[in-house]
Length: 321
Image (cartoon, rainbow, N blue to C red; front, side):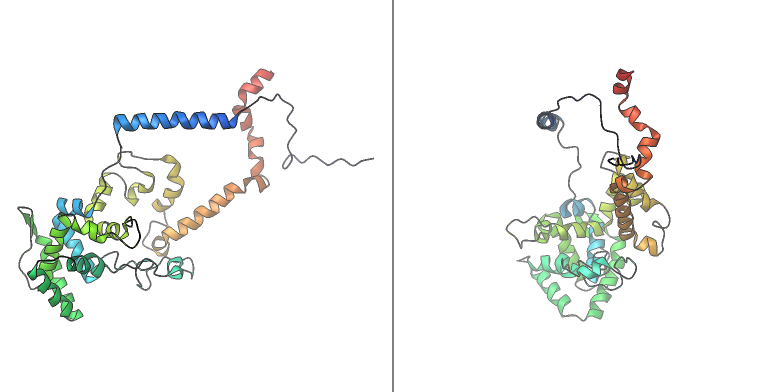
């Protein structure tokens, strides 16, 4: 006598004995795609893009020259966030996020080299022609010792705190900052003219679409972060799940963002300093758990125990009654 397999309700399913209906999946996909495309085009023509205009170095320096100059001096003296970031931009020790004893950034190394002083300030200014005063200031700054350069930068950084803008020109109180005032003043003029945006684009490839340096420079300033706060886009405002003009944003992203709002990830401790790496690992574990639901005994039986399928297929069960 043939031995039949014992039915395991936690693993096996009953053979479907209900009715079948023809279903053309390809036809539905095509019709849906065309309908959404037409709606999207019509809405775009009628309402335009809902997004805010891009923030550029020109728009930033025009709107807030003092903040631009304040940021530029930190790029020059190496105290900006980008200058102290570490891999993949520069080789700064002990700043990478750690996963135990391992650092992903350090392992990958510096593969997008950025030198803020040279790339954001000295390099672009060197491309300006027909300005003897600027050329002299560049030569004087480059010939000075690192100690002298730091002394000039520190003096200018203190003076620029009380700077003003008169008739569209940055006015910094006089001080013992040598050629630095000329450098930052000319950089501000270059930025407001739009020339600095072009200078910061990476022209290594055929298409000039690498805005890494521009984005880093803008992100170092206070103007960009103030716009983010105004639009509920900062980390404390669950910014990862928000869009400009759409607060509180996409609720389906809360599972990732919530970890940044609770201890220990939001504290000034080891967990907070390595929050990005730790949250990523946590989300990978949770994602793996979701993917493996069909293979986890007990968990995979929750739909059957909860009888949620009765609610989903209520029309069918109602017709059977």
